[in-house]
Amino acid sequence: MPITVAPCSSIEEMAVALGPIWHYFGGRATIEDTERASRNLDVGRMHAAKENGTIVGGAGAFTFELTVPGGTVKAAGVTVVGVLPTHRRRGILSAMMRAQLDDVHERGEPVAYLWASEETIYGRFGYGLASLSGEIELPRSSNAFLRPFEPEAETRMVEDEEAFEPFSQVYDRVRREYPGMFARTENWWKYRRLADPENRRQGGGLLNRVLLTIDGKPEGYALYRMHQSLEAGISTGFLSVLEAIGTTPEATREIWRFLFDVDWIGRLKAGQLPVDHPLFFLLARPRAMRFRLADALWVRLVDLPAALASRTIGAGDPVVLDVTDVFCPWNEGRYRVGRGLVERTNAEADIALEAASLGSVYLGGFSFAQLAEAGRVEALRAGALARADALFTCGRAPWCPEIF
Ligand SMILES: CC(C)(COP(=O)(O)OP(=O)(O)OC[C@H]1O[C@@H](n2cnc3c(N)ncnc32)[C@H](O)[C@@H]1OP(=O)(O)O)[C@@H](O)C(=O)NCCC(=O)NCCS
Image 1 (cartoon, protein in one colour):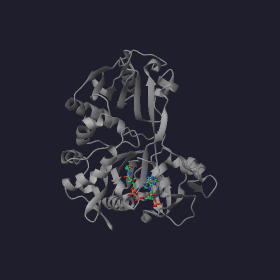
Image 2 (cartoon, helix red, strand yellow):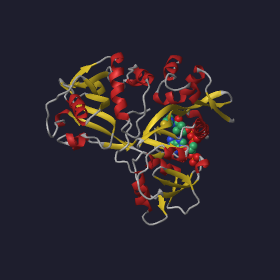
Image 3 (cartoon, rainbow, N blue to C red):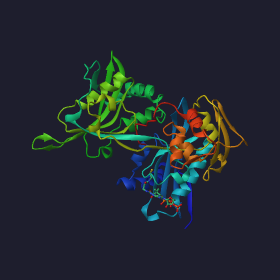
Image 4 (cartoon, rainbow, N blue to C red):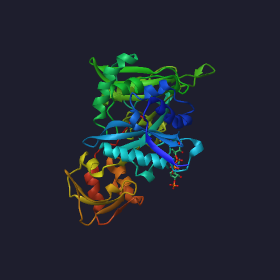
């Protein structure tokens, strides 16, 4: 039976197109759920794959402004991708990726990016692993700081409505500093980050929202849940941090100290942490965090010259990149890249690579040299990798504190 892929045209259709991904989370999207989702995900940005008029797959994209080294770029935040198990491995995902990337291209968004449910899925569509993130689990007994300090900040619990203003101010200051973070709209805060629907609690309690102020000014916040459990009267539960952000090193140190000091809990768990988290140097026993690395963002350069022109390229001799791109062939070719310079060229190339590998270095999370070690880029001239790395390095690991 032939498959067709097209954007959804109504909330009802979108509810059915969300069905495949919801299936894997064990639920079903109601019209009410879909209306909530549509506050952030435009109905027309949800593609549905139909077989004989019946929806069997769906794929969505948020309209994001993504921070990249030295600036921001319009980007598609790919989300809610799923195919019903009855229709797997018949090319439905491939058809949806085709339609979605063509759509992103037509919209003039130079970049698409995502968190992958499995790392085996998106490379074939030109997405490259672009950042890592960390997960920790720290026993309360090992949470002392190397250099204890007198807290100067004040912390207080705030409700949903009160949280929006100060939290969004704090976030907005921080997100401009980190490649990988995106601008959050009021709806994003209201319907996603500060919302607390039952199906997001994963066995935990209510969402707690803590505001941290220094000299009366919002400088940090944390979102967390308690997962309490007792054994012989002793807490074996854990505190789960959804997000903890400070605008300065002091505020970051204070918000984490606050979280570690919450009483009557066995452990603290947190995920989606930056790989260069200050906790490595704040804690007396950083090993006790059991910091575990995993792949985080996957980046796809959809309009390659526009994507490169949106980020800072460092000083140094330009390099010529010879890019192969099977899935988005409009990107194929040779480009001379340097500070303020991205142009097509016929000159001899310094480095040959696939578009996915350029996605991997785009946010500054990986180097050309590192990819070459894995055979993912090829240096065609001596010294080319070091020259390219000098242009692309940005001095800060990319970070996205939230899976979308
Ligand atoms: C991942 C998923 C969307 C794939 O859909 P699909 O329609 O079966 O994929 P396709 O048939 O288009 O597969 C295209 C190619 O990708 C491969 N592929 C697809 N899913 C894969 C997976 N999970 N792991 C490894 N390879 C995969 C296929 O083998 C095929 O390879 P080929 O071109 O070499 O033959 C589907 O399995 C699914 O819904 N999984 C659960 C939800 C999920 O993980 N969604 C992604 C959220 S980020």
